[in-house]
Length: 304
Image (cartoon, rainbow, N blue to C red; front, side, top):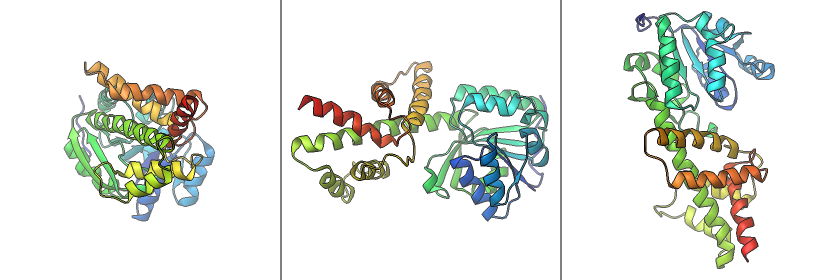
């Protein structure tokens, strides 16, 4: 096994693979702190938008890794990671023992460990570093990280361009395990918030009154997610999603499989996932997760 040699190498440029909503937030933060950033995105419009902000766009992941020893990936899932890392003109063709590869995507720990082992063959360090936080909270994000403490300390100045903190939570895969557990909680809080709001009118409480009263209280049930979900429901604002139903289904599916593989199958989140799938079946997959309210509302209207 080739040892990682990047601990004392200066960070002269950062590569960013994937310039979607989260990737763009990362790019803006790094540029604001004076980092030179080279970007790759398979969608020309995204790459052009990144270039307009001041990044250097290249045509392959290999070109990006050839110019920067710190490589950030912000991608939809395992298939895209496999393509970017090991496909034609992929990162692996340019990675060396000086590189640190940082994956901020939400994937399962098993996939992360496999990718990390394959990348380690060239000596590069690999960190799974998923994001706890929405795009609107960029700069305040928490990054639970799996991998090497030494590699994390090396790249932490880059990560703190767009996050409040990045902490090591375990070996490779631990960051994504923690993120998936968080997504299980997200799914359940989203569901009960949506269900309660749908029940309101049937028990003589306007949902607007319930939301305003509870959200402005010091009740232990109040969370940032309840405030966001409830606000969307009250405002009937589902078409500009902070996080879509389909993305939640994807993340929760990974979380449920992780729990099942660990012989700890979820009871509550597994049930909630069924309602998420119903929402998808009703054509709500591209809407904000708060659109789950519509599933419950239609159900109770039929019972009335």
